[in-house]
Amino acid sequence: MMARTTLAMLVAGAVVVPLAGCGERPQVAGQASTKKSDNKAWEAVQSAHLSDGYKAGDKTAWEAHLKARTERGQNEYTRTPSAPK
Amino acid sequence: MARMKFICDAERCIECNGCVTACKAEHDVPWGVNRRRVVTLNDGVPGEKSISVACMHCSDAPCMAVCPVDCFYRTDEGVVLHDKDICIGCGYCSYACPFGAPQFPTNGAFGLRGKMDKCTFCAGGPEANGSQAEFDKYGRNRLAEGKLPACAEMCSTKALLGGDGDVVADIFRNRVLTRGKGSEVWGWGTAYGKPTGAKS
Image 1: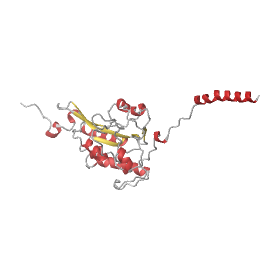
Image 2 (image 1 turned 90 degrees about the horizontal axis):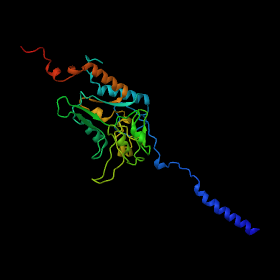
Image 3 (image 1 turned 180 degrees about the horizontal axis):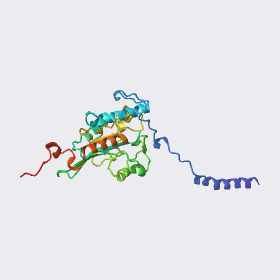
Image 4 (image 1 turned 135 degrees about the horizontal axis):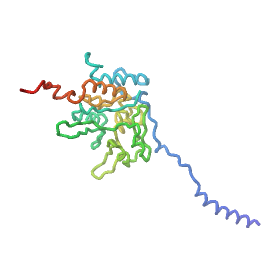
């Protein structure tokens, strides 16, 4: 009786153990293949070359600063008083 | 803020390559990689036109669509950037891009193709803003410094405009309306006067 039970367990084990290879393992992307999250452009920056008058950390101020810089640096029509705006 | 955009005014570009030089110097771009270049149509023929071309930071970027490792992302300002730690240098983005923006550094004549490099709109990459790691991989992050792309800011004729799409579109529209079109555009006729009548 004992030998029969042991044999049955061995047979069951021999059948089940190979089936474990058919299971699906979780395939979560590792740290190396995951995109890093980027800082916002208006957040703090490690730089000694900030634009004149610009203080990092305020989104509205950043947008206003860039807009003013675009107008000042790239729109020459605003530099001449008689030119159309 | 609208999306960040470049506009190049073909009537103003004089093919000086100042934008290319500014970009290479600002970001310490390696030899053989040009994030920006000037393309001239009908070169040498009267009436030739030049435009400065780089990544256009497409709204529906094909590079982003075809990347097998999904290394691209888009910032809140619409700038298309990528993570070089993820890039495998396969070159699919190069085939997909209609502007030839993705560049691949190589090491020697038969060297391996490196990770993709392209215009970042001077917005760096996913590393910390202004960090040395960001500079080494992507170049300067001028946007985080409250500045605009170096190529546009250095353009001597202001042919290349870069910044908030609404703002640069207004500047360009005003410019076009002011200068007119055809023979009204600044050129020979404007500089030396228009013919008043046929000679007798």
